[in-house]
Image (cartoon, rainbow, N blue to C red; front, top):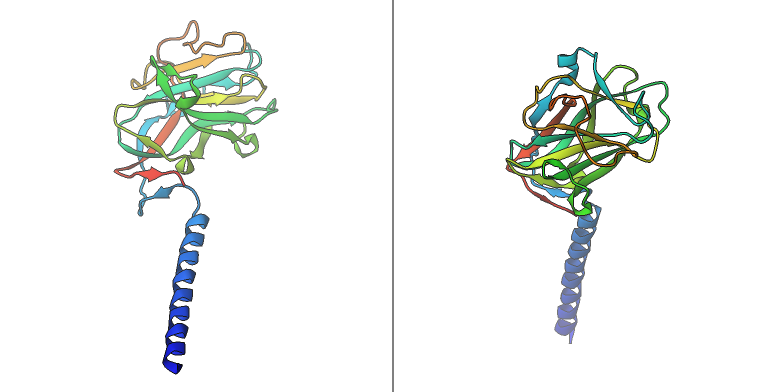
Length: 224
């Protein structure tokens, strides 16, 4: 009888330990933020165009309500991925002016026929940039963290960086430079009045926008 009670007690204790371990593991998994990435994530610079250096601050593209652009102007820069891995962040050379009224929308999308895609399935990341955190008057790199979006990229992919909001006034500028200095992508624009993505009339095929992309090579992730 006594031996039977000991066995029952031992079984109860072991069962409680197992249950505790399972609960702990489930809780730890539920509390893990963002996508599940492989360890030692080390992003490197992939694509880059320093428009501010090329233009010396003399040329910029207005995103939002700009002089002669009207309400709801959007701009986009396409780029061809050079490193396979995870797109971890993007720098954009932007600034805001005294007429800044609204925050701006930042989008990473796939492209179709070389232009930013309108298909919702092709939107890889969407976030809002608070203009209070953007440099005033002088263009500077603003970093957008994309790790939580878990964007897998491959060498040769053509993606688009989109800024603006065609329904709002923003008053934000995106640095550009005349000439085709970045030959792995193009600059596009559109507005409420002209909703198709086009290279602006009177501009050369270049006139690229300032940006950097960072990729963690040979890494993969999966959404939480």
